[in-house]
Length: 193
Image (spheres, rainbow, N blue to C red):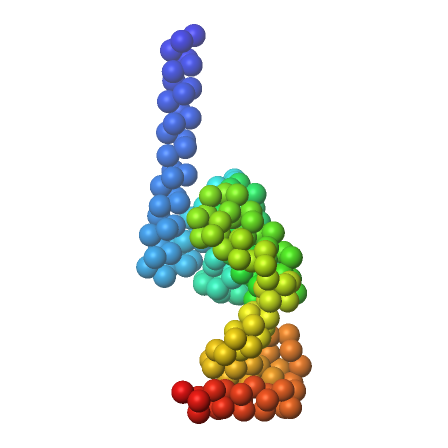
């Protein structure tokens, strides 16, 4: 009976080795920008619950690497990885909510996911969380960050707001009056230097 148990344990060990090799092979392929191979290696692992493979697939969907860019799929895989304690996945979700990538910008969700990353041990998230608690929900969105920076004298942010309102970007409508205001403020700030 003992021999049967040892043989079964050995068989389990051997069967689990390709899983690690598959992840490593997928990671090597990803680093070489061979996204098709990375996806082929990671997909079965991710479906079996491998958190790092799930995170990798989330990245591929978010960036459109070897697959059509799909924020909904990216978010799905990031959530699975985050649920297993991958702080990088929680940060990625926070950034999607901050930048409005496939979701409506939402400062409350940004705070939640950065808090989750902090709980999962991400040092930078722990440091940033206290700063974020002082910011309004709107300030935690990308457009809000530009507005805060511009109000504090950041010329690049002023120019970016001019561009945002000229083109109607980051969830803002085209507004030539606001675009001119921010371009003028940037010019004025440049003239003072």
